[in-house]
Length: 92
Image 1 (cartoon, rainbow, N blue to C red):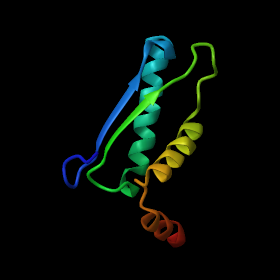
Image 2 (cartoon, rainbow, N blue to C red):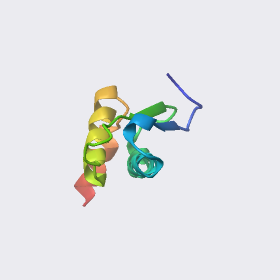
Image 3 (cartoon, helix red, strand yellow):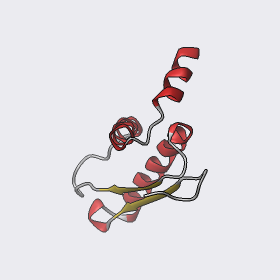
């Protein structure tokens, strides 16, 4: 599914089964922040929707777990620009 040319559309959803509002909002903030860090490496014009699913009693994922999973999903979906990523890593 394609969005507007040159822009990505992001949707983040966390249902009530994920936990109380504090937990849901924290998960959404973590997902949005991780997306912001990867945004320059995502092909433009994409429409992305992240659905946070977790059991109420399970441990809250941390920033780096979400980051790892998000990169995996981007690679699997073919949305990640590997050339930009590698060129940035080679400069450092």
